[in-house]
Amino acid sequence: MKRTGAYRSRLIPGVLISLLVLYLVLLIPAPESPPLPPGDADPFVWNRDEYWSYLESRFLKAGEMDSDELSDSIRSGLAGTESLLDSCRSVILEPSSPLLARLETAVFELSPLIAAQTDRLPEFIELHNRLRTIIKEQSRRWDMNSAVTRGWLYRLLYGTRTAVEEVLLQAEIGSIPALTPAADEPSATPSAKILGITVHSGDILVSRGGAPTSALIARGNDYPGNFSHVALVHVDENSRDISIVESHIEQGVAVASVENYLHDTKLRILVLRLRADHPAILADPMLPHTAATMALQRARREHIPYDFEMNFRDNGKLFCSEVASAPYSQLNVRLWMGISHISSPGVRSWLAAFGVRHFETQEPSDLEYDPQLTVVAEWRDPETLYKDHLDNAIIDAMLEGAEGGETLGYDWYMLPLGRLLKGYSTIKNLWGGVGPIPEGMNAAAALKNDRFSERHAAIKERLIQLATDFQRTRGYRPPYWELVKLARLAKGRIS
Picture 1 (tube, rainbow, N blue to C red):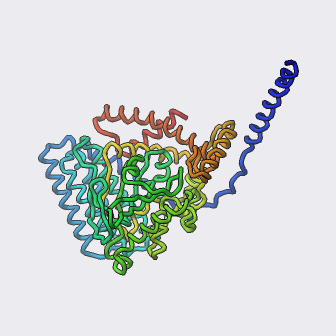
Picture 2 (picture 1 turned 135 degrees about the vertical axis):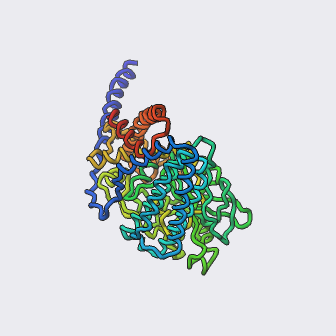
Picture 3 (picture 1 turned 180 degrees about the horizontal axis):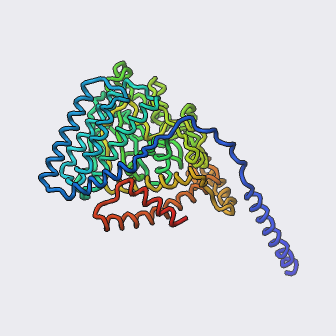
């Protein structure tokens, strides 16, 4: 018994020393990444705060108008905007045309009136659908990598959508359907229904997730957008079963049923389809189905890791955008005619912390601007739309801090635990499982993501309170520019 006690007395300190040594070894920081090269483009900046305040005051004045007077003003505004759209359709426009600036102003200044009398919202949505169709038709002749083209496409497509959504958020919950059909682009490929809309094999679903990183992907772009995820639809020609091919950070490329696809948080969904008059479609009407079949077969045949580097030129690994672009490119259809750029130093630094190495890439939000694609439908429930706006405002405020030098950090003493979890995750990946740290993401990046998400959640809790106070005091939901101001305030209070 004395020998056993002596053995234990020597064993316990030895184990503790070994654990301490292991902890210290695992605590050794990873080598620093090389400095990032500077961006080669200029991020888009609205710089129109005074104009946004003017639109808000126009909304307040509209609320004080006599109902008949307001109806007359709306009728006149709709007619004037329709006339501008007719003019845009009847001529060939350059992206710098003054007619486009007049159209933008007409939509922006009509939106506060519609927000004060939301029974006219369906007409406003239809007007926006027509505007989007005309602008995308005009853009077929434009240089998609020109800064002027990108700027005006963004202003007219993203900007006018935002105007519609500001009106949606002032309407009574349940008064407006979540689904907005757009253009019924013909297709010869097999079809089925999702959320009440007919989709065809080869269609592309662009959506927005509910995680803070989803908001970062959507906003961390030279042209901040609303979308963070891309998926490719396959419809079986015999059974009409729908398979959705997508790439997840957690597991790489996977095939989902419609139910599983919708089970993951979707704050909004946009359905895109290759134009029926595209030369490749005229040559082979079944080309989109062929692309979707290629993507589905590869996903079922092999494990394809998630591409954290966002290198769209190497299809060995695939991030979500590549799931659509890779098979189409093999059939000589190059999606993302306007390539995405991430130029702001702060945004580049934060994305690099999560493993991004390529800042000329294919951002989900930018696919909408591709003139090869038609918007078929858009789904945005008012409540999830508000969550989308809250998350966007928080990220915009946080990225302002990134531009000011704020970095993504983590608790240094958690690195050994993170590395042990990474080792466990790697073993699970080898057996086809999914661990707590995604394949391709290192322990430090995972810890930074946790810190980022925690900070986002803390700001959001405070922002919701401030936004609720705003609505109680003023009688309307804060428009986006007010949400950003409130997000800055919320961020400052938890710093």
